[in-house]
Length: 155
Image (cartoon, rainbow, N blue to C red):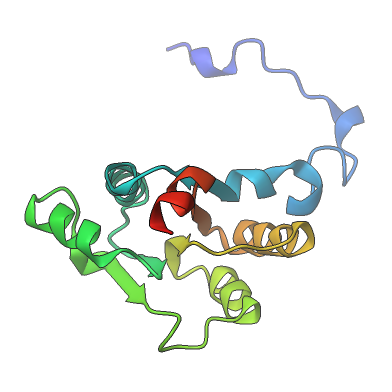
């Protein structure tokens, strides 16, 4: 029997330098893969993002952590059967201290498949820290932010 997986296999001992292909997360651009900012235009848009995030990051062994979620959108999706609320943890920042250090530590633990931060604003340096921690903990961090148009409608 011929093993087609071994055809054209070359052993290249000249490329075995320690740092040739292995890079740290901060060097390889992995960070941007682990942290995304998504603009939300309206309540329908928010529900759509919640549904997509919950479906894309569903994991029977990990949680989806939502900080300051819009409860009406989540309840509606749950009633419609579009998300499973059993694997979602909701945290209200007005009741619990949700500092940048807490966010970074949670990301580093890796107990969540995704962390969703609603209406959180960070500067570039803080976003780099969050992104780095998300990559190390292999936890996707998604920042949902209302667009300027939506903020004007609220006032």
